[in-house]
Image (cartoon, rainbow, N blue to C red; front, top):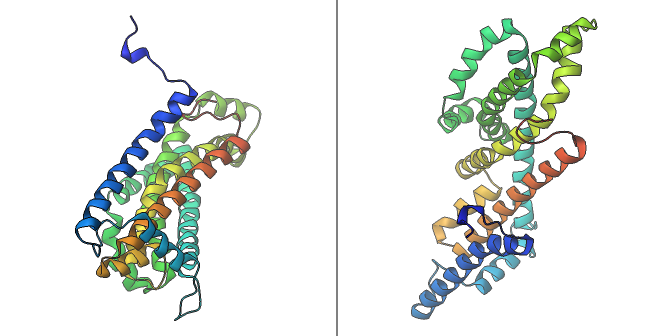
Length: 273
């Protein structure tokens, strides 16, 4: 008799089980939407798929009468630019901080405690300060993303640096490598694939900081649009925007995972190589 813990689905079974929760959610939503609309055809809480389709077409295919631009794609481009720049800055600073702090004891003794304290500061609490210092423009939004996820990436890189076998560093020094060569040729190549994994884990928080900053002070962006139309209870716009953000997040995560496999085929998640 096979135990439940030992049963594994095949490819088709895994695909079905993976899609099943989504199908159930869609069925529950459709049933709830039909029930509410049957009771009140002007109900806005659970719009039908046709209503959401009309809203998406209006936002994604018809130019705005005020600006002449297509709002949906303008919001998407603006948000992705902010997200990409913030994550790039955070990844660069986090990599350098983590590598130098983990590889050079003198730097670690000085920077590590400060990094720990900074990582405990709620980034959203800094948002008013960023708006005061940098204004309401793009810099404050990008800064919030960078400040929000840099400590996480830096601490992860610090830990990963410490996991590199000490024997490798000894061998490099035996062969005459100096500190710069050890950092650039031994440590850095092993941290790069781990950096990609760290960025993947930090993307969820990066999206949170992006949406929060856009909701408070912005004139475009996915977060700005969601909080703009909420005052009109426009769920036919909010729900597609939330679904679109989720899809973008999934695609970015998938792209990073594929990139890691292509650039670093020797790397296995979990640190094995």
